[in-house]
Length: 478
Image (tube, rainbow, N blue to C red; front, side):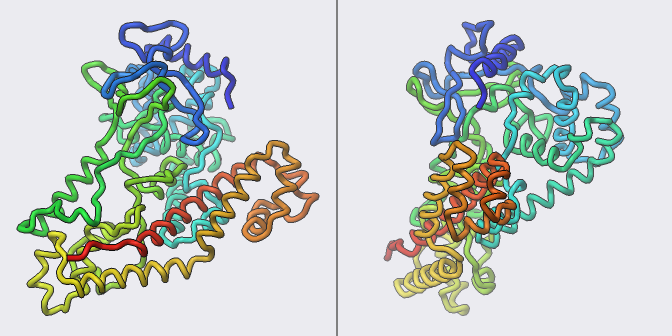
């Protein structure tokens, strides 16, 4: 945790360079105080920004000039050596370039113009690419494990692609390691904001203190099948789905404004004094939140749960595979329900009722019963094949929370050794197999591993709850 004085130096530096939460009343000692203040929210994101007065929806709450945004362009314009180095590697992606630039700038130490901001960046992250083998397997679900492996492979591939550039640039040797690259890429993944001139985005001092709120009211509900007109074609419906998805990804509470030459943030709703002011920066599933940001939401209206689906179900309709899922509340997606209704229809009759299924209409009572039976059976099968139950996961989370509350290293390590089950595998993975080793092991490293393990268990628990809720759903009958 940062001290109040340490954080105050960042806010003073930000104020000196034009960041302000007030258009009319800028202050020299801090960039905050008129609309926002830094506060701690232990149950909803940790450190964040709170309202210091009543805020109205749509009100400008923070403004950061372009000159203070950390981008590949802003760094290379100020450093000719960096600019020339980047030009020697034109094949690098925009994200690789910005990640390298961050490490390059950190290598300058206190001489960096951005040093007051850089020294306040988190020391560790919990995105999927940082998950070890134990945390990865703790997710239990195949496609989540695969996503973790893919994220880790991409990070290592990106790092190898920049090794030559790092060596030529003579940045500090400890910043050329994969560990440093992983930290920097996690910083870029979890803290950048969109700007129109760079696909990698920008780092925005103070602006990156906003915690996330999921956009609501945009997801399809399986029982809200009247969203589509009955005369619509499949192409019409797919286009509507695509348009809605695009609008979700565009949902933000701020953006770079050319006329102001600044990044401007607005209140996404009305806030009372003391409430956390949140920022909605896109529509993400919980797995995507873990992959890019290192957290998840217990209630995420945009979450998607996937279960194995037979090939003949895919073949019975024209819906893309990624649209066949179950919502976090247990409702099957519009596309999944439509596909199952067609699959449960005799192949010779599908052509005649296809327009009804694609419009969201129920085809018959018998057909609907077959759909419900398929959903119930397959959700049961998935749950039964997973290594642990919901009850076991709940108990495991309780035990992890007890361990996390311990502040004294010796108590932490001693308590870890008293639990069995997955705790034994956790300790073995972290190189702690007996009490003597626990005494000398880094409690900080254990706590970071615990944090990632907890996230994996939380994700798999929400996955299982969605399947249980799906089994219990009563789909509306004709």
